[in-house]
View 1 (cartoon, rainbow, N blue to C red):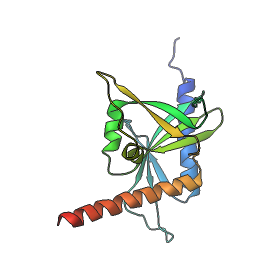
View 2 (view 1 turned 180 degrees about the vertical axis):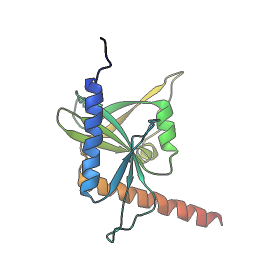
View 3 (view 1 turned 90 degrees about the vertical axis):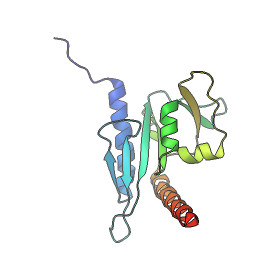
Length: 169
């Protein structure tokens, strides 16, 4: 009988989720897996030192690989993304963090998507190109300090939104 198979891609995808979940849990926070994947995999929620839930969340998109490719000078990790996903993430109110997970090294690398496209020139989409390549700094290693930093990104985005609303009134 020919049965459905669990592929290596399924295994490393689950390992990438586990890697992020473990780091979030070590910070004392929670993470929820997205049931339907339309370009986002995880939703992180934080809590105050008194255990009270904080407003807002941080969103994650995970990309797992067995063969991590770096640039020739080893300073960046190129990742090809769907153009439609990039547009969706860039317009998201919550911070979106792209994680490139190296299954062989059990290590993650991160990119704050909205900040990346705010700092660098938007890529020119030639013709009907459906993908774009971003470059994750190889120094952006995913650890507990990075997870805490993502919560600060969320706080900054919320503060800017409040200031924008205040300026319009």
